[in-house]
Amino acid sequence: MSKLNALYCFVTRGCNLRCRHCYIGARYDAAAKRPPAIDVSLFRDVVRQAKRLGVSYVKLSGGEPLVHPRIGEILEITGREQIDVALSTNGVLCTPSLVKELSRVRLRGISVSLDGADAETHEWVRGQKGCFEKTLQGIRTLADAGFSPNIAMVVLRRNIGQIEAVVRLAESVGASSVTFNIAQPTGRGAALRDDGEFPAIRDLIELDGRVRGLSRATPLALAYTLPPAFKPLGGIVGKGHGICGILGILGVLSDGSLGLCGAAEEMPELIFGHAGRDDLDAVWRQAPLLKELRAGLPDRFKGICGECLMKNICQGRCIAQNYYRCRDLWAPHWFCEEAETQGLFPVSRRQGSCGRSNREIPRVGPAERPATGGIRL
Image (cartoon, rainbow, N blue to C red; front, side, top):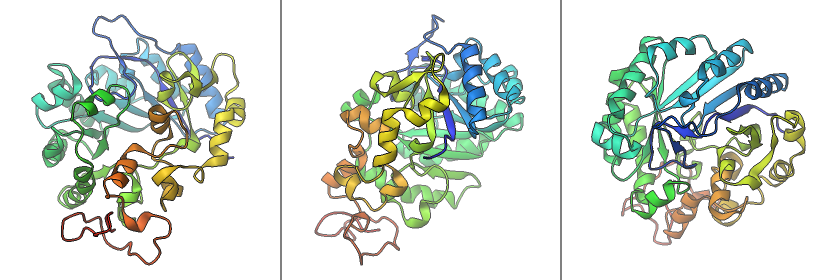
């Protein structure tokens, strides 16, 4: 059985922004009504249990984790227990006082969302006027305090042309890296896709080459979470390459429930227990759904994911997202399924493709596209 490596703690469902792509539909909290937020004593208990199990780190997410009314105590607990923390935030609340509190914890990484190189684009995505400058100031404050924030950008039709501009902006505000993420058609993202705001599959595939080219012209580390089947073999090694860690993580929701990532907020059948009454180790070892995943991955995948030579690495890209969309643990990932339907799935990454070259990078221009469908890597 795989080791429990990380707790993904969705410490609140509240958020101070209204992001159009939010996959769990976090609740906007302008009036400070405080949607569900994890009890501090419960958080302390689950972190202590996780530490005894040898968990490497705790990821704090939400919603926006920094709107938790007792976020200082949450951070203090992780520091006292000497467990590493990864933080995902929109940056708006990264004030000097909050950053001072962050300096007391073992922060292994902090990721700040920035979805455009200008206020108009970023604020359209994030749904809140004035948040662009606040986010930039939050990144600067983190950088001035000695942190090395990562910038996370969700790639949409209206910002895909700003990839380089966002990298240059990241350089100017003191970020150390930029990760480009593909939006997911779940939660509020489903409506965004229906409105035509997702880039074309071909454009998202071709973006990988642009990002790799740009990485040679910046001191920042760049990553793009395109599924591994669409990347050259040399581009799969390292972090941020669309690889699912589902066999080593457990989600802790804002009400204390234990489940499969944050997607369990919307799907109670993905909840395995509760931190207030169930032993963490017992849940990890005995939850039927987790046992089913361990026994079935990756051989039970259906459709194109079942045929893919990269399924041992990719693990379905995101089991929770796939289930959210189809209510089937073994459903193929939507991106790969659409690419396959459009004849864009790499022919060299399908079972039975021995002899086809894996040496080349994705090329989908008219001159290189095979007549029988698919792209060659």
